[in-house]
Length: 624
Image 1 (spheres, rainbow, N blue to C red):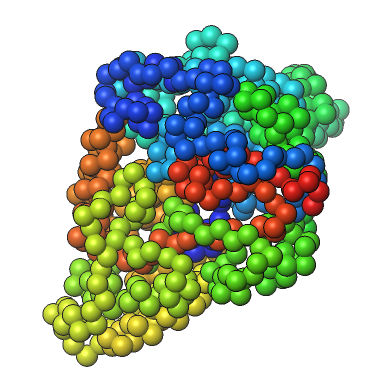
Image 2: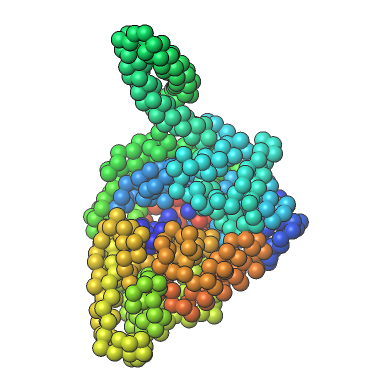
């Protein structure tokens, strides 16, 4: 989730939640506790849900949109890349917005990115610090007609945790010891240790619920192909053994016959296993290219590099739950158009109904009355990464000098066209773990020069680094390079593709390079990735004992208020040591043609992804 994902993931998400509850912030309780606490009962009927939602700023009536929703039409959008693999646990996934059309999560997040909204998980309760019982929503079916229940969820979690499955999200479930089926719609999660980030993980990739029927068929298909290869190899071994047996004589003949018999038994066993797997795999399709979820839209057709088609799910449980004829579009077509200017031209020509607009394009469209333009903050951070363990940036004075040489307001104006907020820390200002006491690093080039002199670089300094080749990253690189030059720092920056960046990152072959993070949900994921020794983006470039201790404490703490304080203190520790240079928290620009109805920006900001996934849009009059 770093630089290699297009600087900060600017193909924005619009892309990834009671019964009796122990840890359930956001439903009126100011804090949670380590021991089970009686909570409020989550509305179990559609009517109760609507009443609950209205109290939190959501509505499906005229307060949400002045005219009635109408069914019909195929919506067209476009992005720079094809969706990639459509099992969200396999990499690469290039379009998380579309993933959210196909799949639904167990838990969604609210307006402050807290995992507080039950979705496919109807409720949860902490029996202890290491045990959670989760009630699942009844009446949900997957696109293949199979039921969502405790057995299917257990299979998915076990599948993710199995190294053979190749799930990149497996490490996020490391604290999970096991999942038990209590009854048809109840599961029990058993942890190895207290796990404060459990709900946040269930509101993330592992919580995208997939059809176990389709997953099992996919496993059988893969295993049968692998076993078919073993059968072919063993047939060759048998053939060789038969030749040896036919040619041998005397004592050698007995040995050759014994070898042949062993080979035949092995082949027979393999053929029997293959027969069973082949039966399970009959008619199966690769899940990566034929996804099966429970969401409002069903995979219809994919043409990698060109387009993806989805069709309306007529059996979407949520629509029936609240009594609405949703989703309203008959389907989606998501085209691949790499050039942002071509995408915009298609939008203006009426060939696209919506798209995410880059900041550089905003001045071109902001006064266009034929478009609906929505600008809102997103949970990303743009930043730069230091190598704090080797080279010049090992010295905190150098890191401070570099950070104070960067004019954040000028960068926001010149690179992000004013659509950003100066970052004071890693968590955005509207994230529940944000520390409001922290301030952005001030621009002070004279201080930078003094700090460099104190560090022994009175006559200047040369450092190396890299940035991505995207337009935004390239512009940022040039601006940063010029700012550093003003304080006599020469930054030798390479513009690299994702594969080359990953290589530099792995070898820690840089002093100062592009960083940042996209999709800041559970507060553990980013600091673990960046600052923990086992983090996927650290590779030894950071080793801050205070930060590591706080990261590990935050993972374990299940008390909401205490966990908040831990991460606020972690932000301060990271800032005090200038571990990274945070630049700005960006804004997202989503544009619709005028005939697209149903985007309420004010309501979206109150509940964010919960609002988005519970309020599908439609065409005026039901026609594109």
